[in-house]
Image 1 (cartoon, chains in turn yellow, blue, brown):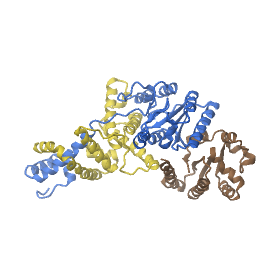
Image 2 (tube, helix red, strand yellow):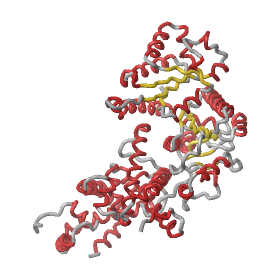
Image 3 (cartoon, each protein chain N blue to C red):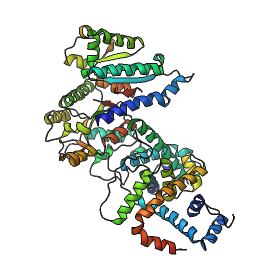
Image 4 (cartoon, each protein chain N blue to C red):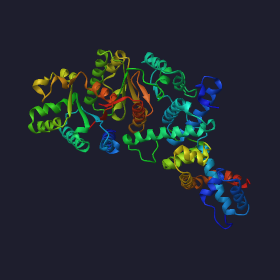
Length: 183
Length: 243
Length: 151
């Protein structure tokens, strides 16, 4: 069923659209670490998707297609940013401030910092796979790269992020033991 | 695959991400049962994956692009409402996502950046950027802004003009030290389409590095980051002028 | 902050030249002129000289025939044409740029506020070069697809 065919008029479709928006937002935020930018990107993505929805043929391809649009909007936006703000490939705009207390929040903060340090391509791949659960084939389509590139970027991202595990080890010691015991 | 071959990290990632065929998966499971080193490898990869997922389980919601420093001045409310109406119902729906906070501020919401908003016909949209705080510079800048507003009024041209201050330019809007409080108040009253904007990053810097507690003039709007707001506006097709 | 902003515009300018703008122009089928508006509102002689050098470089890089380059002068920037009026070296530079198609535009508000007579005090300005508001003109040009450069 084509989710966008009703232009959000019925309540179920508005709910579905909102769910899409939330999922898109989560990824856009992971890519930019800026709530404002992420919001802009998602608005633009949904607007384009709604305009194009007539062309959407395979209803099951809905979700990956949306991330394709998001990826293009993201590239457009950052291409412009690069010209006027001298942002290098790794730098993200930011509006998260390190929260005090809660070790959980400390972990979240450290992981986000590590993700911010990844290259754009690695960050996009690892977030699409680990947060959104897209298949490698879907990610390849979304980012318009060969599947081999998806796998190698993922690998390099994981290598870079493994250092986190050592950094967080004392706190996640209990979790680590628990995971090891499964299967 | 040869029993003695090591699985590459790529292969193992594919295993964790459920991208292998059932046969390939079986092989990995078979090896896992007696290969401690492999188990650890898989474990670490799974942990990384879990961490990434955890880090974005909860994400901060977007604040509205602009929020008023003081209540009481709904500048451009009529204009903003008109803008919202001029847009199609679908795009209009996109303007007010249910999760946007600060519901008590319809102006802020309506002015929230959205690429879905088609520009209302024939409204000039100009961003004036002030980052130099020298007194003479500020005076010239205000002269330019007023001259611009007068020109638009004379030619019956509807205009949104946003004066965005960051860096030393913020001095223009500091209630305690600016020389232009009265002038700015007059300009705000006289020109409905004119908005003065202060950069939160600069406000924070003044506070943290200079120990200056910032009190803004009435009616000044605060944006998260001056530079980000400039990007957003340019992205939306606003003209950009640095004075 | 000022330095960063200056760097931004230098960067923008360089990016303009190198990012597909020059490439676009070298395409045989492209007949579209590149549109740029330079904004000058300071009277610092060094800045004015640098600006004119930058403009000349721009013309050289893209080709005068491919460029619709306008210089909007307002506020203190009016000094550029006052200097050209009194200083022969300066005048020579302005003349040369004009011959390559550069269009100098003058803000009427500025003339009125400073009581400047464009016929007597400025170099080679006619009524056609005067706009009611320099800033409004810059905004208008941007809406017409002109890129903005602040040297």
